[in-house]
Length: 386
Image 1 (cartoon, rainbow, N blue to C red):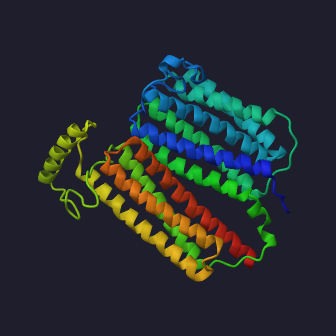
Image 2 (cartoon, rainbow, N blue to C red):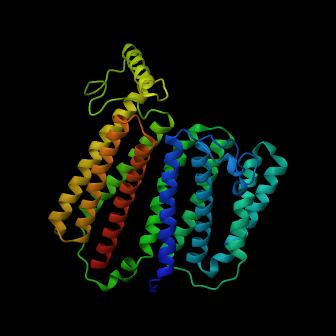
Image 3 (tube, rainbow, N blue to C red):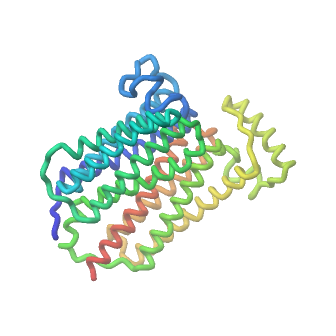
């Protein structure tokens, strides 16, 4: 069945993806400014409904943390609306049932598990939005099966993401920051892919006569994109362990190619780091051998990814030609990786300045999305060329 291009749907999907990207940036600012617990309760904010927090609370780290919550809520509403739009009229009753069950589950948790009442309030709130999306009458045809699956995948992920973020605050579980960050990257890829699938190019590309992309090239790009995702997990672990400055110099590491991590060396490193932090008026963190080695792994992965993207760009130019759209896209990808390495170095040189560290997070997310979308476009072209 042919599904025509719908510009309003496409731009709504783009809005959802862009909002996700901005939310990741805000999350980076929260972490970079040590603002993760600036609002100590959830889903309320200092006991208030989050939408009614008095202006006198909006200062210091609360600005970052509370804005992050508000934007996350807005994103959740967008995703529920997108699920209803892409699912069409057949999605009405599933959404209504899911919303009703979430409300019931939330009320039950509040009544019988008072120590988890924050989860109950969260489920009740999101359940009300989902139920409303289901019962509001509107007749529209569903999108193709791929898009419906993307919508329901985003529907599940956005709620899980919100729950993880909230539990990190409510139960003071800082380690949840790592899966929270990983899910954010997965969610961004999913929303960006949804925008691609609703685009005019995707819908009308069957009219063109595309050139097939060699399987080896598309597989290479997918492999590099997977490596970027692993790199983002390593980076999230570093950030939430406050290990971003576990090695305070670059391109060397404690003036060595690979730093010594024996106990005596670690004592020396921590003494040096304490002097450096006090001179720079930044917090002092005790560094472990694991954190030093983790940052070295992060650096090695950065070099490997850069070489992988450079190889992809060269192979695309050789196999597809310099004027091909995917070749140009690969060169943009290479440019992003160049900027990313520069931002990584600047993060160290400027003592993990919040704006630079957040830029590093955002460009990393863009690099992942660029690789995955390149691969999806290559697969689409190859399928149409057969």
